[in-house]
Amino acid sequence: METLELTKPTIETTKDFLPLNGTDYLELYVGNARQAAHYFQTAFGFQPLAHAGLETGLHDQESYVVVQGKIRLVLTSPLVKGTEIGKHLDRHGDGVRVVALWVDDATYSYQETVKRGAKPFMAPTLEEDGQGRVVRSGIRAYGDTVHIFVERKAYAGVFLPGFKVWEPHYQPAPVGLNYVDHMVGNVGWNEMNTWTSFYAKVMGFSQLVSFDDKDISTDYTALMSKVMSNGNGRIKFPINEPAEGRKKSQVEEYLDFYDGPGIQHIAVATDDIVGTVTDLKNRGVEFLQVPQAYYDDLLSRVGDIDEELDELRKLGILVDRDEEGYLLQIFSKPIMPRPTLFFEIIQRKGARSFGKGNFKALFEAIEREQELRGTL
Image 1 (cartoon, helix red, strand yellow):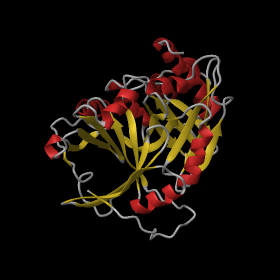
Image 2 (tube, one colour; image 1 turned 60 degrees about the vertical axis):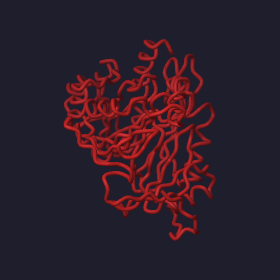
Image 3 (cartoon, helix red, strand yellow; image 1 turned 30 degrees about the horizontal axis):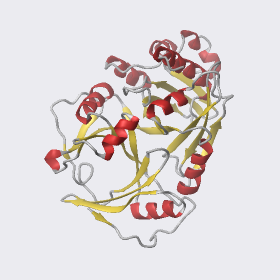
Image 4 (cartoon, one colour; image 1 turned 180 degrees about the vertical axis):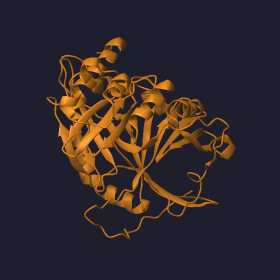
């Protein structure tokens, strides 16, 4: 592993000064990577891809990589005491540490973001093995979350140098998850504008939409949100902050249990949400449920849809429409011991929005879960 010497960028700066090809991988720090990999295989249909640990020369950590469609999850655990991974777990519990972004030039991406004010996390570093070379670099985002830029155009290996192919006998079928649609971050009081400005200034993102406490509120809790997107729309980061309400909001609960800002949920896209959610439920994934009354006037609110209303009602799938089409979505219950990280399953049929019409029903469902946990 070699740290690269920084030089002047060799790529001309355009309006989109930070071209991003997509999400490369998400790395979760977890207490038991082997068991977490088994869970994501069994429950969510991810396929085994790669492994790094004692057998590959690591002595302080191990990682399992699972894949489905274009989604790669890296599940990492410490092997000894006193590691930074262990300290992260002690503070935050299981959760997303790294949002890795696929770029053509990781050195240029690092230079452009750092000169615009990003705090460095990882200087451009060359990693090589017999399958080629990868360059990675990184910057810090909100809380302990980091963005890693991954340049892999000269690499033909299974994942990254230092990983070997992982081919266990146990390989349950996938459930139709295709790619990461968006990732939602929760930040502290009055920090939303700070971090939306960060993504605008440092990474060249623009604001797609914003929601205030009138849009996202119930009788008890409220929050505010702005959605930031990169130039080609492949990376979308909604940023949430708490708002004043009669009781503790879901964002406040997250911040308490995660002990600071972090990734609240990962939205993954499917082409057949009815089939995907049916499979997930059969595999034991639990979802938030809205009252059955939500469906009584659904078609009058959203118009004609392709799906059978009874199927959506049975599965608890929500529907919303914007001027470009409609979307279907459903939210899992937290998948970690702490009430922090969860998944959204989404299918877009033209819609580019984020389900504003479902906010009230969704957050009331979250509040029912908070009440059961005694944290509302």
